Structure formats: C-alpha cells, structure tokens
Length: 107
Image (cartoon, rainbow, N blue to C red; front, side, top):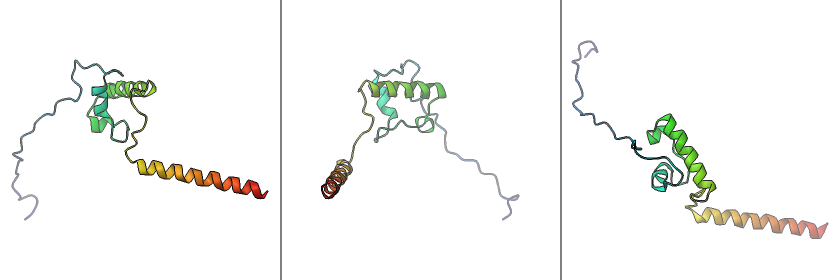
C-alpha cells in the first residue's frame, strides 16, 4: 500500500494536561524541605529542568535554594546509599598508607 493511498487515522487517545510541580502559592525557599526534596535524586543530585518540568526561573530559584540548604547542613551534599563502596575506598587508602611507611624503613 502506498503512502498516498493510506487512510488518515487520528489517535483517539485523550490528552490530559499535567499539573505543574510547583503551585503558584508555593515559595521556593531553602527552609521548604518538602518541596526541595522532590527535585533531588536518590544520589543527592539536582534533577534537570526537563525531568522536573519547571520553568527556567523556577529551576534557578530551586538550585539556589538547594545549595543554600546544603551549606546550612539541612541537606547532605551526597547521599551515601551504598556503604560497601565507602568501605572499599577507606580500605584502599589504608593500604597505600602502610605501603609508604614500609618504603621509609628501607631508605
């Protein structure tokens, strides 16, 4: 069947407009932890505008609020979900420290 002879079929799926993630009455502030925590990933990263569906102005205000909350220790800079990786890092640093002390004894 040629493209020109194909009948035009319209999608019957209804379109539902999504509600904005930040309501007009909500203040984007570093103290509003319930609002801020919705826009941070599990790793503690700030999610992008595309994922958040925010305007440019809202994203800028949100980024500033998150950074202020981190500086004031209301939010962690990183969320350490996997303690094993942290343990491996500390173990490797102790190995290098002991290796350097062995070299000092021989010199």
